[in-house]
Length: 154
Image (cartoon, rainbow, N blue to C red; front, side):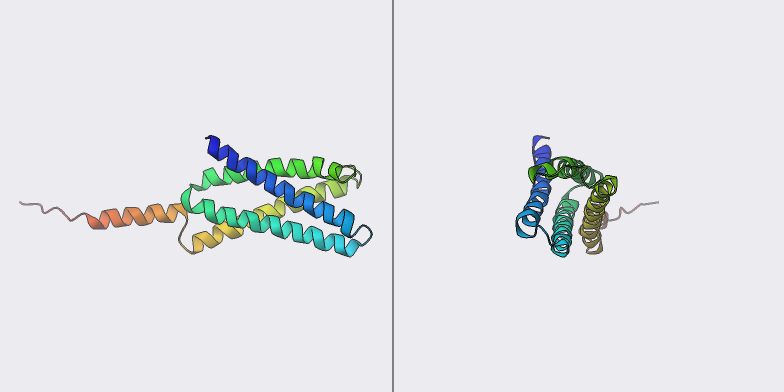
């Protein structure tokens, strides 16, 4: 159990670090360029989606769906809270400074990127037939085929 929560915590920390790096690049690299800010934000969401796609692909092969989805949801929830409330404070901004529209847009974009990434990873894994359920069904079929039929005498 301890290993499971360590992985969830490390994933949440990694997602938060991606956001902090993007915020620092925007603050120090492009303070006045709105186009560059949008591109860096887009790159951040792509990186977050890729991280979750890789983890969904990796975890989906050796864990049941309910377990790894719960782990990803917990990590994303913690990372989202840190990103929305703590992230702006690290670069000297108010989390609610942009208004309610920007605040909720951050939340929806973050959730959209994470869900899209996890879906891409899991659907790729499923299409390849390497997900946990497919492996279970494959083992069951092999086991049933390996046993010879019993001859019944009458």
